Image (cartoon, rainbow, N blue to C red; front, top):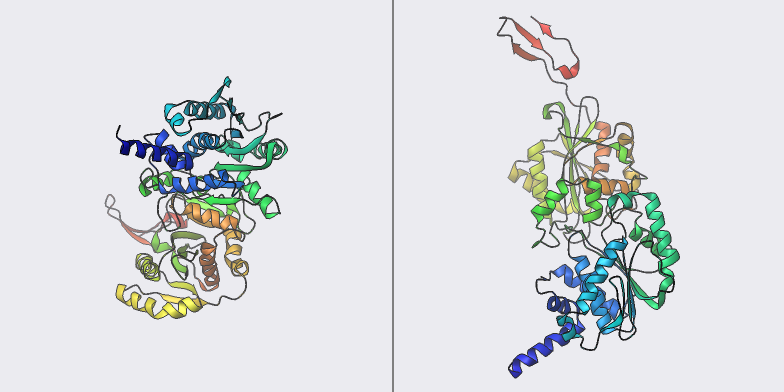
Length: 482
């Protein structure tokens, strides 16, 4: 080996000893680092350095969190602090033991020994789920609910506290998990000990949800890293492994509430306080277009990166006054993009009227919207409504209508998860732009007419030679034969 090559290898090993991603890449040759992995590793390194002691990482399923957090991080941490105690917690004892075996085997590997030459396992303590280092450190793995008498922790890492969605939806399982965390696990922390919770959200009241609620009430302050599978800008978190098309396929085959929680880290409550889940009535196929009175509404955002969404909604009213949400466009976008989207919806649905808010956005962009409407031949009368009162007050009109007749929503629309999450979380949720757009529709309702029942259809009776007028069976009218 040349002196240059020897120096390169020494530098690589020193870098791996200092940083989690180089360590992972050197001990796992097939590992491919994505930007979100680096982000996760940066936060875990802050825990190791003692900069933060409460870290919550919210990451979609199958995005590489366990490889980094539950296998590589404990081994790397104990390589740097072989005298400390590391507690690894998983949903079940079997899974925890599997992680313990992997970490133990990693420390015994040749690659590891080249990076941390002085770290060894104790000869008399090398069980899969519990082992000691020769420097007196301890690694202990257990499932939620496991016994911890006599154990301590400089770091307690909890990776996915619920083994299934069924468990997360169980109030009793959630209660048992919380009581174990607060009554048993938390009290095992050493002075200055750190807690890392890494999971995907499963329920508003899951462990992460309760910890955040406790924080709001004055409890531990958490550093929270929230990584949705699809960003607000519509980009995939890990496009090399889960491109946007693959994520959209998952979304279309998953219940909206599960997608919103597992993949977007935005669990909605089982029911809302302002809007109720029972008011959302799924449909497969909307009534014929000619039977509906169609209207639209928009909530405009100022900028593409200001945190708010521009939302356009299209609603159809049938002859009996039922509301059908026919279409929705929701994105953090520049004005040119959302104006073009508005024009496209107008041309597609040909609404009778469109509701929007008065204000600076409309005043500034009004001429541009007019120009684009003429350019695209997308004409509709735009009604403006003042932005007085609080959002909840402005949403009362659509709330009252939904309380009586509900809102029919397309069951398989890609945006259903966002709709459900926002409505059921309102007014305390992170976003309320959909509610604002629907609220504008609500303010239009007092002047909206009903849809039209079909006109009689002329039917040729070729078999008999007669001609007859026949009304649609949906109207329950008798068939009139001439």
